[in-house]
Image (cartoon, rainbow, N blue to C red; front, side, top):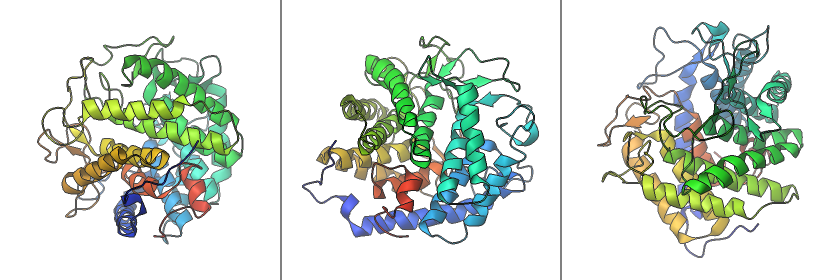
Length: 419
């Protein structure tokens, strides 16, 4: 694998742009601190405040713990205590002490006693970053997360993650999801670095082979999201609930961009580890970017990337979500580093121009998480501003190498500009 120095003036090499990214990161971090609750981290509203009935959530707690660990590793003061708080919550009220694994909310007070691969992937990611940050309790959390993945979620036969179980693991959901496997791929890249065990990279490759090199490649590189237990596509899944925040109907361009970036991280990680690395990782990453940009960007005549498309590539849910644009700019930066091609510079600047003008909220802080089809703030799918993880990573990824994973790269001092 080669990485290329662009023959043109790239924002990735511009000190002012690097500083802008760093400053935006600090602004995002300062906003997110208010999400702390006694049992973890909760959902902030549009003004950066916790509602009176706010409760902790495992997804937010894991994502915040990971994000705050990345800040602490860089040497940003004031985040070690927040990492420790997240570790304690994940080791405490969010964990099922009887059957193992993690609930979606403390002591399953939301009525959900199930165990979801999506959440457990984020717990593993948070634990791995906290280990790199050398925080107390992180190693025990990581050991627990790995044990649960090994015992229940990873299917060696399928080369992928099972989706979810009931509380005591006796009943399995007859469904397979690309989304949970995508975040497992992200977590496995981090686990490979933290554990120094390359079998996580082999598992990540097997997921990518199935979901992207198999199913997505056969679908014009638009990601097939939903499958039955035998990995047969379910094209009509959630047709009656097309705007679901985690399992929407149709294809999701934002995930196409996210997968594109992850394929390049996997390629770089395998090369760095001296492992056999298929050439299709880079070509598939480029195809994912091209096709999701073609069908997702300005597809309804207005700037921005729509949330979902149907099977004829027509927009279904036209809202613009902030995480989609975070992943698009991050993927553009990764492809620019990998290829040095000017087209990715153009896309990178285009995506950031949109985010700067439409998504970044300089009045109330953080980013608008959702815009309507006319690019006005809305809250049909994602209300408030609970998500630090996507925007924070979007300002970090352009400043880091493709491998190792973020926490390890930061610990090695690989960031372009100190914050």
